Image 1 (cartoon, rainbow, N blue to C red):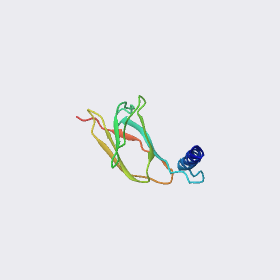
Image 2 (image 1 turned 45 degrees about the horizontal axis):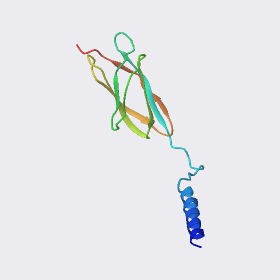
Image 3 (image 1 turned 120 degrees about the vertical axis):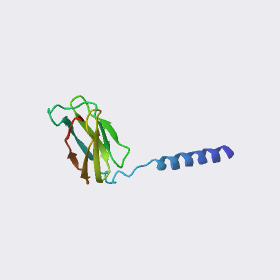
Length: 115
């Protein structure tokens, strides 16, 4: 009698715990906005690698690749400022980058050399 009660309780715990991790497959997907672009030297047009690009107001920070490209993914809806910084260049900030409803924005930035 005791062992059948323990088995029944164990089975009930297993069944209840299986419902805990169930996900709603009908839920709408979360909007995934993207902000990307390339960064180049304003004078020469040469693409710049290793530029620190920051999305102000977030903890997102990336560096450009060898072709001067950067990309922020999974950005929440809102208005942001994209900020680019590289040693020996003036810092550049682009304001009013607005993303919403799974949009994708391309923001190319040209940096001036610091003299």
